[in-house]
Length: 209
Image (cartoon, rainbow, N blue to C red; front, side, top):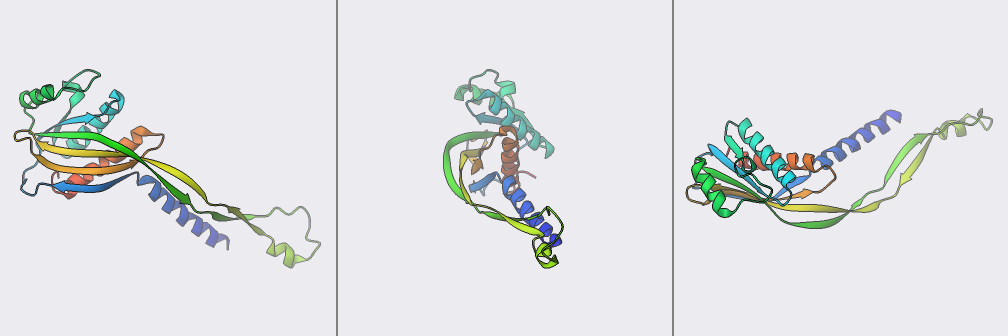
């Protein structure tokens, strides 16, 4: 019985861990099938209000592009300042910097969803207070007791984002994906997970290696 309980507990814990890691989900994706090339130099611009989050997103994308052998530059490094660069400044940087593609990240909204966390039953050993004067059957059968945790409702908040890759010369859209990221306390870890999912989508759509 102990081994069975331990095994079931391990399976539940593993399933919870996988679910908790799935913080970003791609809800829609599109690619221009006529695009047969591959980015060589990408300018990454995160259209976010908070400069700190903007830098983290841009740096994480740059790191991922470079790990795939693609040159990439964070916009905040070439367009300094706390405010977002103007469209004209961005266009000028694309030309003067020799970029062939532009990656834009933009938050489009938020949404809330309620979900029910099911109740659980956990077997816990009893601590005998004295010798088994009532006979061993009752003492043996009472070695474990069930502890029930009732179900409860939680509200999840999601950030909805659009990630798009453009051809710098023609301004045409090459690839775009809409995603939903469950918001929690560790924004930096969420950003890393989100960027990883976006890069995987780019790879699956044969835009990057």
